[in-house]
Image (cartoon, rainbow, N blue to C red):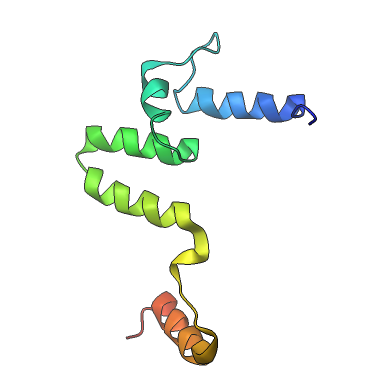
Length: 96
């Protein structure tokens, strides 16, 4: 297995620093320690940690769950492909 490219590590550390997860010496901060408790993308983890401050934890958990599953929330049975596609289009446009 090859090590990751140096520029990928640098970019990852920059993102973690900008999120407040790392200090200037590359060590985990208090916020960073809380973020690692969530098996999510660092931006979603930071969003959850910050939600406590703004008293919107329930809403943020729902948003993070929807963002972390990707497109797998839409079930599309093979025998009802057209019906599922129409329902998904109506979902996106807001028509009911």
